[in-house]
Image (cartoon, rainbow, N blue to C red; front, top):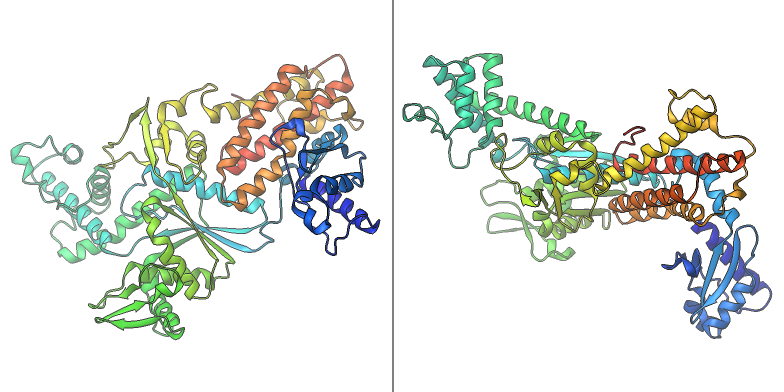
Length: 595
């Protein structure tokens, strides 16, 4: 609707110019927006205030000239001049009723826009180390990233989801060592005559060890990974392979355990993400950046060479430096240390060069709050590589996990924190995803487990899902009254209910018009959410739409003795279902037909 109204105002300005009433050599763009106060109309433009000087007149006079040429037809009911020169326009009832037809015609394509123009865009998110379970922060980034991808796809981007596997570096060695120690402890307990299940239980309890048992469980170093999941992995290896690695060569055992445990954790994390509807197109291994290609040169060395050829690399104190200050960073950065070891920054540069080599017009990274200071240097590298402005970084703030307002931190399975999997098990995917997206990314989230589990209107996801289920119930009731089979899906029931001779002009109650206005605003909300990487706005829109529907249903009886009026209202009810379902799908939340 915004585009239609802007076209109407633009034509009015052109008509005024053609009539000799305005001296514009170049017709100004008449951006329109929704007034905050509905009393001021449905749409307003400040084009007169912005262009009065060029028109050599005062803003209000210019507004009156433009308004006189605005066609008040089936689309616009009235035009008024307000304040110093705002042009306020009120839509006709027919225009609002036409929104219902548009929703039904477009279905799940409703609200699509061409912001991305079909260009390739990659979103990299979650990116947890494959050394243990994901924490609730990863859960926020999973929900945010996946929902953002849905929104961007709806806005015309060709989106690819990517998970960056941090499988290089010393943390993998520590992980392998931790599993190895737990495996040896299990073997020793069993060797002492203990049942395997008892050995595992004792190691998980840890602090309950008797003095004579502690000698078998005191080998974890200070930097080792704790938590029961390490014991679980070690025991799974024992179950599959027995004690064959108990007295094996230390380095061989740890190499084997590193690869096996890494594979187990990665597979498990994939399952957890899939359980909440998050699936990635690409799983990119950090280790691959150090593997030589056909020419014997690995991606990291190649990226450094690209920077060197561009004149952005220099040697100092035996190290290799990137002159990142030339591109806005606060200091130059080391890529290869004096001892020959690569820095993490070097591999990150290589990774982003790889992304752009794959043809993405835009790359979005979602990082944790502790990476905020890393953004300028990464953007400086992308600029130096010839991709200025093509990297955007979203910083996701922390999640504070609460239970009835009190902090929750401990988890026996992970050792230090409640895992994303545990949260999903207790709360469910729908509430978790919805509440993880509920706030802007620059705000931390207080996620109260008990609130998330409530089955009442204080829980926003329940409130929205209940509205959808209530709509479905109304449609089924109407179908039953007309002898239509109710076991069909809701789209089939809807199609059977809608007659060919709808009389939408009957929908003129204020609550009906308010509902249609709410449906009409979805396209703008979607485009803004895509443009600003702000899927949280869809949660607020969903609640506003649910509230508008409840208000309409309270004020207007849908199933009445007036068949024509009932048909028109059922059409509005079903349009609400279509849009509400679409919004929930974009959020990655189910739209239940019964609750």
